[in-house]
Amino acid sequence: SVGCIIAELYRGELLFATHDNAEHLALMERAVGPFPRECLDKSTNSLTRECFDTRGWHKIGAVLSPRSIEHVRKMAPVEMLVDDRDRRSGLGQLLRSLLTIDPKRRATAREALRSPFFAHRIGC
Image (tube, rainbow, N blue to C red; front, side, top):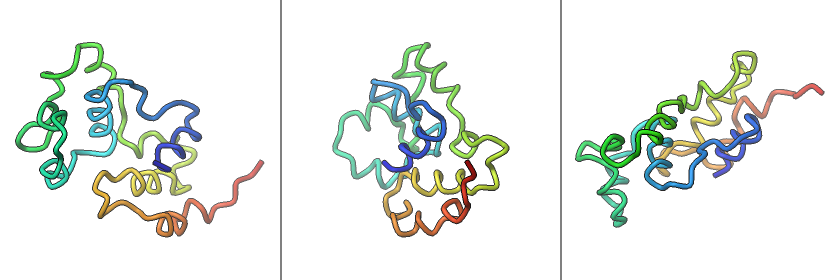
């Protein structure tokens, strides 16, 4: 996703640093909020049933190791990944719009390019 790429370029590190699928889903939930129930219901992947409860929340304690749980707890909401000095740039809102889990609500490329973030000039 372009949202991950932009966040990684900004931070200089992976947004969701993991190779474990269940941990990756938990990191995503922690950063951008719960997966929409409709999306989970449509999934045919067994990982969905393994990782999410009937309300759509990740079953972190049931499927992750203590080390993974600690890693997930350190994940900040996406807006908090942007430094205070950059808050007014619109980067946090841009990342939120690009990292929205529900594809029907996620920003399109055209919408993202209209973001206030891209209206700012970057000084060198």
